[in-house]
Image (tube, rainbow, N blue to C red):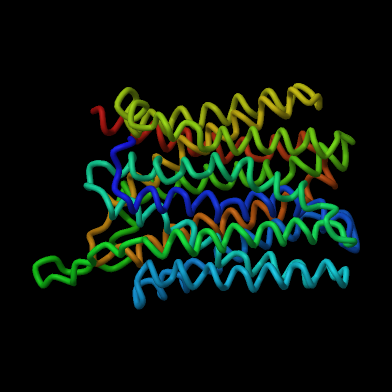
Length: 389
């Protein structure tokens, strides 16, 4: 794990800074939204629009990368993000809910770019080490679990307008990320070979390996994003738990999302990717059962930890399988389609989270994901059986 190429360590450090923005917006977006929004049901719209922006940005970001390469795109997005942070600060200054929503939507370009770090890491290592490369980069999420919420709370009262200081501190992450990514080395791109014809997308996405990889990552993200977006609203706004307790639960959740990445090579060797993803679905079911049993801090805390573990097993498993579905000259279009499908579905989940939690309550939010998890469980069991037969 530790004898990794320099590129992977640069990507790991940079992901921790980029992802701090995601955790920051998830932690503060609903709270700021609840203050600025014309109605409570719109409180989570800024968080949902981050996901919508991510889905919308995936194809353009991949297109730019296919033309200019990963390094130039990474550096350019650092500068772009600083400009959008300035826009978010302006929204807070003039107390404009809709301008703040525009800013969080535009942050989607940043998160769409961040999601390419895992593929850049895979390209920097041998093909049989894709799970190790993915997990190594995702270790950066451990730092973001602390950094994002801490920046949010430390900067809350620096200026007269609440949370402007938080965004000012956040901008420092992207100055540091720019400096780090300056030393990232573009991996060699193999030119299109006449011996390996490029297949159509229709042919590629019909492959069982693509379907399993995409569905596992998509279900992992949909359920995680849906429940995590609703959690601060249920805890802080509805149940009246303190901001500090809410921060603790969200931080614990994000740690659980990325801590297993330290041990992924061992987990994959012991379980294999198929059983690893199956375990991720089972973690989700246990998460729901615990969350349904009460509204105490411990219920939220343990449930969100299990939610993070389930996401890790499903997302790393799906990401590690995906390269088996394409060859080198097909990678940008397949990665684009995969991430577009995942984050479009995640956007729908995030958009509905606030509406569901305010109109139907936390229990209905939890129960509404059970059919999706049951379907994914059936798919994985079928695949496991077919591979063992």
